[in-house]
Image 1 (tube, rainbow, N blue to C red):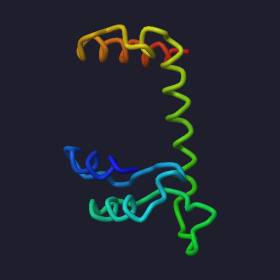
Image 2 (image 1 turned 90 degrees about the vertical axis):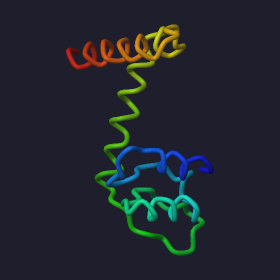
Image 3 (image 1 turned 135 degrees about the vertical axis):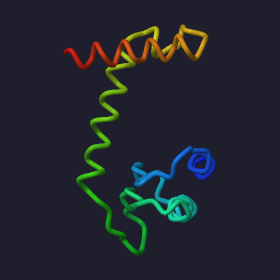
Image 4 (image 1 turned 90 degrees about the horizontal axis):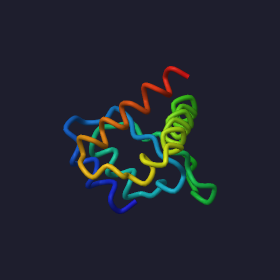
Length: 103
């Protein structure tokens, strides 16, 4: 949660929405997302007094992204990052994504 404002500031373009899990439901994170003029798609924690609304359909798509990265990490070389250069790692990621798409 403490690094998210720095990550948002380092993006080349402003995001339209920030999708995260309940762990990121803090006032600092919500303020950082609002500072980027983005929509916060973060479900509120159960102990939050004011339960805010969020886009549940967009949040459900987060699961698809997590499952995709899980399938990529089934390849041991990708998960452990045997490739030492960023170019080789990116090439491996592209290859694995293409193989996943062909499945």
